[in-house]
Image (cartoon, rainbow, N blue to C red; front, side, top):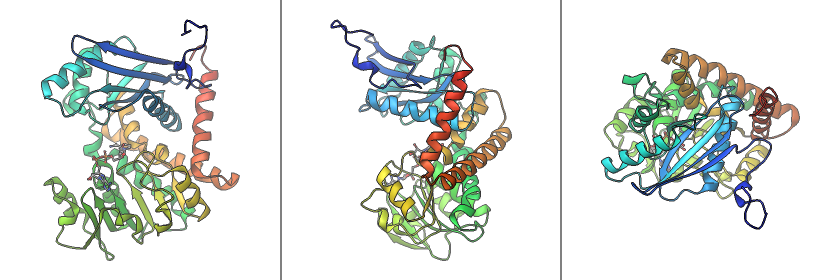
Length: 375
Ligand code: NAD
């Protein structure tokens, strides 16, 4: 796109050797739909990435999320590139209006076949069923139409436990008896806690948006799951001691799993951490400064797009018609191999695991691009 002055439009400000291939602005005055789709890279295959519904997202954020999906999908060697879409709207709007917007969005992207929508903040498997109904493609579908419900089966939490297995030697710990603390006891956190407990780890701290629960001798994860299923907080448990929400950061443990919000580990609190291994369940849970400080202290931190790739691996298996057990086995293979490779390269090259992970993903994207005429 060239502006009237002959200058390149600002829309190309993100362009580099990977992408973005396409940025599409969508407007439908008949229903008030405003949306943006960024297809970042499709060298390995059609892009997969969530459809986020929120009133306050930006083009910049959409691009960064699309790029993160390119890296995540490439690191996992999936036959998919990365993309992301945002619908500018309040996700808590009246249900009928929400369905109208999502169906209109689906029709608008129907012919952009190098993008496969998935659930994200503000959308869910029902929304993906509407998208699928309109255009015949989406991931994160309900089980009734061939979906593998990744949050219900705990795909991402299972992947975190596999990452822990692969990282234990690097962090100088043994999973058997390892003390774990989990920030955020939602779809990711509670399944990670269960999968790790099944491997002999002991849950010594958990938190949710209401507070932290600590139990040095171990917390019963089954009882905590039951509490959460009733819509209550982990702090309502009749065992353990409670503390404020952010106290989870300083819990004495061997493995800390941030599985709630971005940027929760920063240079303001990173000194409080008493752990050997951080498994990044949430997306970007640590700032770059925090990651640098952790690395300097010898704390191993497995980056988000390596450790939490279980969800998208499951989505890709679903898209290709695979079963739940095939999804688990793909997660196990890919997350184990990638965690080992990234930590090994970080050690050999004396760089942070994130630097090693970014280099690995870029290499994979660029090498696939060489096989394509036009990516
Ligand atoms: P969720 O909504 O199911 O659970 C989030 C949990 O975090 C809830 O228990 C909530 O009470 C708690 N929480 C919110 N703010 C908190 C805070 N400040 N301190 C402590 N706890 C807090 O969400 P989820 O699906 O488990 O996702 C968690 C994170 O992992 C998000 O960043 C998400 O983007 C990322 N992620 C999720 C998946 C997936 O498969 N669901 C995959 C990759 C990454």
